[in-house]
Length: 82
View 1: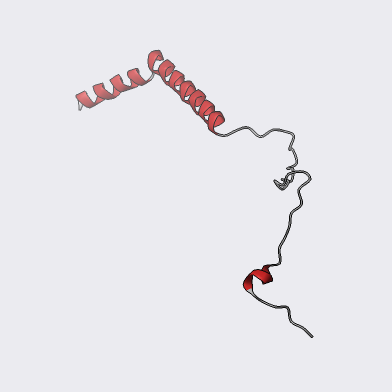
View 2 (view 1 turned 90 degrees about the vertical axis):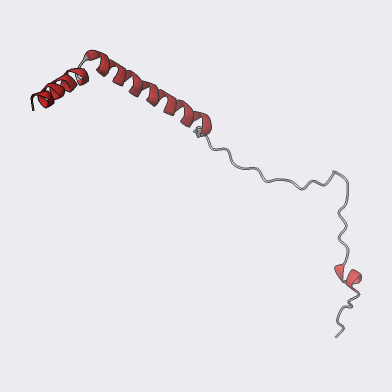
């Protein structure tokens, strides 16, 4: 019984010592800084100005005409006559 009281008193002295408190605070600050740096590194910050998206133009060269052939001629189909 006396050994348990001695152990509890010793643990209370260790936990409340200034070295343990200082190291605990230092580790908490270090973990906070590391988590902040990693979150900014892998997730880009949103800018305040949102730029409108531009429509993509077709990749045709200037001055060239796009020719669309009738697909029915390739299949051998004829147009219906009234």
